[in-house]
Image (tube, rainbow, N blue to C red; front, side):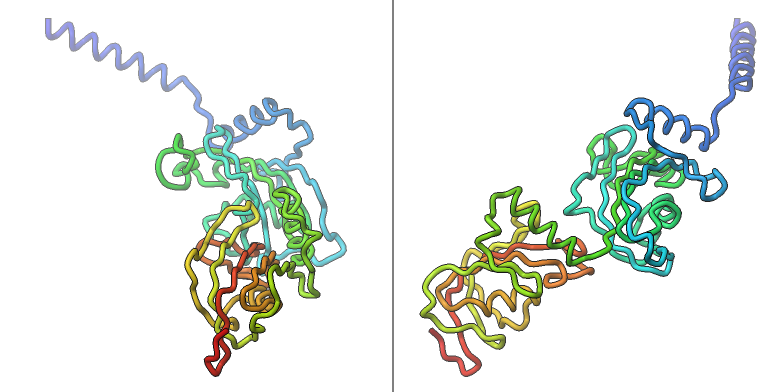
Length: 311
């Protein structure tokens, strides 16, 4: 009996191995291309073109939306680029569509150190090419995050790009930062009913509005001021606040806050909508992405001069 059972199992194993041997599995290039063709068909992306910049080997597809500043020098790997983007994995489990948060500023040649895909780097160099350009990109998994994927947790949590996932990117390379900031500020004001016409715009690009009595002490650059405040990003999300009075020296703040507070006096409130160059610039901070515009609402509770006189 044991002999017969062993013979049956051996025979089954041989048949199974023979079937597997005859089956042809796609390699990763074929797998990616199949996924991209299915995605194009399912989502009606008939205007997508195959990238042939590297001899038709990348497997990437694109739709150029804006050619950008074609009369300017082409972007090189040694150039810094300011970029806003969205990402969607083909399985739909990872979506990062917030262009207020998805900012990058750095050298094109250093994308790998910023955990950005090789395919995205290649696309900026070969497809977008110029500042001001924008495009939709379908990046094969082998030029994205490969078999390991990216992020933490499980892909079902929405915090992780699963392995072997092709990616759908929308990318814009910012050409004129002040103009982009001003557009962002006005879109923000319109979206959240801020009433931008009630603000005064300075030559630096700062928007400010002062309310309340103007009989208090004037704020100088070297003044110490006590304030309560709220800080918002352009999603109107509160990212910092001080609900009890906190004191600091004005000249230690970011340029936009310095300029704006010097428009106000003790006892007043001042609302500031600050372009990125007057906030945390291209570096950003721990909770603030690169080249982010911000809104501060200050209530001024005290003003002290260098001599310590307080109103």
